[in-house]
Length: 175
Ligand code: GDP
Ligand code: MG
Image 1: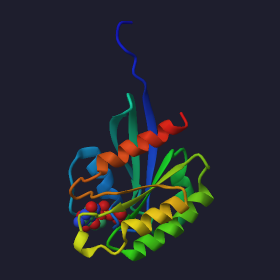
Image 2 (image 1 turned 90 degrees about the horizontal axis):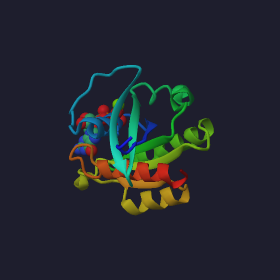
Image 3 (image 1 turned 135 degrees about the vertical axis):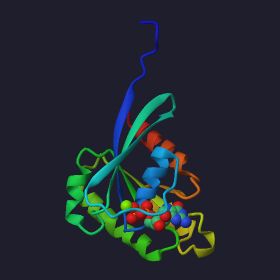
Image 4 (image 1 turned 30 degrees about the horizontal axis):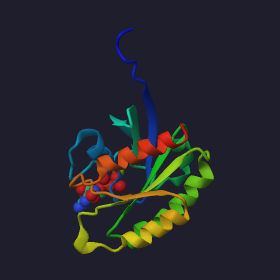
């Protein structure tokens, strides 16, 4: 054929982290380029999809987002099945949510295959006047635990595409 065959890599991504850190907002911002201020609490998983090109490869990221996983941690292993990437989200204005990230990480490592790549994401970077977790502290935790790290704002969109480009690069690392 005269056209270039372009392979699409479908990648399941799950979001984990405490309630209200912005997991759903990040997925929505990535998939639809918009920001929604409030949500109905729903139980069950929904997923958000968009493709992105990284280094000439097309990735179709399917972001699985559940409202229930914050409270029902026993669901996490099921939720992680076939996931290639876990985004571990905390809120830069909440030290509690950052501390909780360490405990989420333990759950992730205990219940996921070692092939799952993990990115630590400090969301709500737009709220700089309320910042409680410094970039330095988060960076050193991430490097200690061997995690990719970035700060984002689902509200302004800052670094959201960069996050997904970073995830694409992580996928290419061992491809
Ligand atoms: P989830 O429980 O982790 O899924 O969090 P949500 O996406 O539902 O967001 C919780 C609240 O934080 C909502 O009121 C959002 O509008 C708000 N929020 C989410 N991301 C951001 C952000 O980047 N900046 C700001 N200022 N607010 C955000
Ligand atoms: Mg949510």
